[in-house]
Length: 389
Picture 1 (spheres, helix red, strand yellow):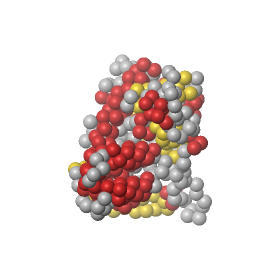
Picture 2: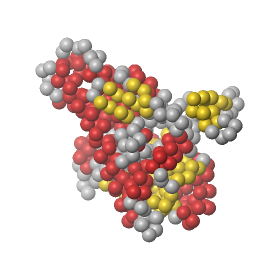
Picture 3: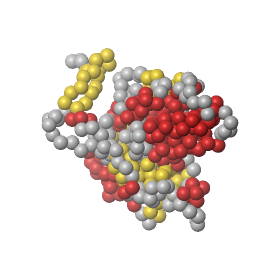
Picture 4: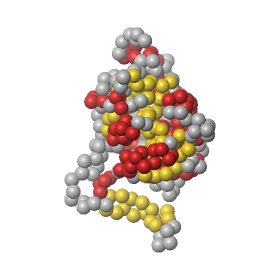
């Protein structure tokens, strides 16, 4: 498993890697309050649906461990925790992992012994720690299922390695470790099934160029960075030469019908994949699947500040080509008076998705529809109704 860690945690202390400083500088922020976690998530110093949920859950665990709750009754303790979780939920409303983690934590404190406020706090802390531990095992399982599916459906083998394209960052930096979409790529590489990985720069926040490219180089995975607008040309000019067989992306929220909200630019890649006859795969833990949301039309899409498109920050490059990580500059890339539209996500219709890979298995497309009942049977029966497979 990769040694990269977005989150370092011991009971009573949480450190979060400031991903805005990557790839030039490793710096961990101490996060000890819900306010600090909110700012960390909102400013995108941490990003990726699983990592966001982990940071929010653990930040409040640290807060509780360090005595932030002074309530003397069980009812007031539960109310205090609820209010902090409701506050944290607004830091990244599109990411369903955060919502699901909050629901899980609220249920946990209500099932804990109701005779002692300390028991409520202990139950919360232990449940938050379980969210961290479970995420890694989930990612390893996604990598395994995705790799096996690509062997069956895309002909990946040690004799005929495949290449893939990925978008945004879905690796160790977006999770507790290994990653989702990048986890599949890691597993392909470790099994000698991968020829080459291409990654988009992922404008406007450049998670692909800053983070995914960094992870691929760190792991020694053969890789090439392209701009978002080069994807179509990549398949037109390099598909046969590189045996490009799939586009693999993550997910911030998957609706009940399989429509998937992910980083802006994902939808257009799905269109490219369909036109060029390559597999389009979504890698998502079941915590990213929102059965209460019927279709992608019901997903709230976050819109961000315009200056993310018109300005950029980076380390200074010296005249000799070396990078001076001690100096940064923010520069304008456009006329600052221009109007900007900056949605953080788009929604890819299920009809363009070939498979959604989860830790429980793969939900495949059947006549342009994705049936999530088999991988979400228990949850489906609880939220939607009886399952007839």
